[in-house]
Image 1 (cartoon, rainbow, N blue to C red):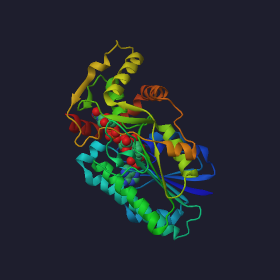
Image 2: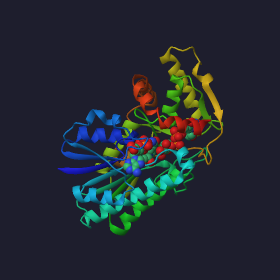
Image 3: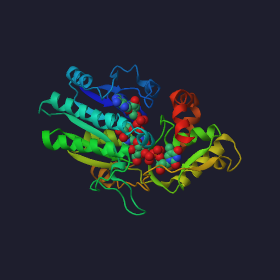
Image 4: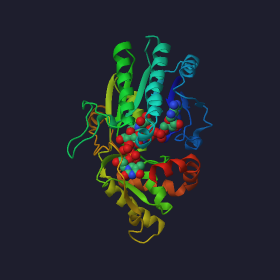
Length: 348
Ligand code: NAD
Ligand code: DAU
């Protein structure tokens, strides 16, 4: 039986990856390692918690001894590393927290894998799940490819770029078999409501202002999270060692257009008069160092592994909005407590 370690599996994307692996691969023993920070929630994976091939481990990837002991105990065959501090605005407030988890935490996992596997890499694989933000910002034209130079602008993207470099360095220096993916903006269920789409859905439900940064003319490439989980499964099993794959939705939206679309759908669903939610749009102070545009060229993963998004944006957004409307208790639970303090500080 293969032992697979997934880090960050109580978070947004990680919960979808863990669910997919536990359900699809009963022959694997799946370990989900998560520190349960504000972004991690066991509710996100409640449906699989009693599966015989699933084990949850609460722990911090920054704790070197803990990580070494865990690897010594289980000698994992594969690692899918998703645990991270993931929110750009928080990285501007507290960059060091991002260095600790995203850089030191990744280093601890790399070292533990290298030391445990001791040069015998048969059947082993280290997969780092990363972001398109490492490439910096595009102008109005062009797409990020796998050969685009790294040019990170936020403390978050600088920490992810640093961890990507360490993963590649361990591949070159020690022969560690790795794969790496850089993905665009995800959306879907269990997305923490500090990020644009779930934050605005929550605020529309509660008739609160919709804080659009700057002029709203920033562009992101949106991908349904379950399509990202399918791509991760494919790269983990069929990607080539020492290769990078870009993953994206072929789905660019200016923030303001996306917000207006969201408002229209929410008005229909909530039985509100036309344009009621648009009246909540409030232009606020811009994010410092705000990247203008991200857009992914995902042709490599399409040509080499046959992946493409399976869900249109209309379908994905509909599913996402329905999920939040049907899971308002989840929203209330995650927005109680520390979230209120964060919200006050960020948007007052
Ligand atoms: P998230 O913030 O929703 O979840 C992160 C998870 O990591 C949480 O469960 C949290 O408890 C856990 N975690 C944080 N610090 C930890 C630590 N020190 N030790 C152990 N666990 C810790 O993040 P997400 O949006 O699901 O992103 C997952 C990964 O995918 C990240 O590496 C992120 O950089 C990358 N990514 C995200 C997106 C996106 O749009 N969300 C896009 C591309 C890449
Ligand atoms: O591109 C991939 C990245 O996408 C991931 O690596 C990150 O983990 C993920 O958080 C996301 O980063 P962004 O900064 O693009 O996502 P966010 O949802 O924070 O913001 C999306 C856009 O919306 C961005 O241009 C900023 C804007 N925005 C965001 C918030 C939270 C607003 O206008 N108002 C807001 O209140």
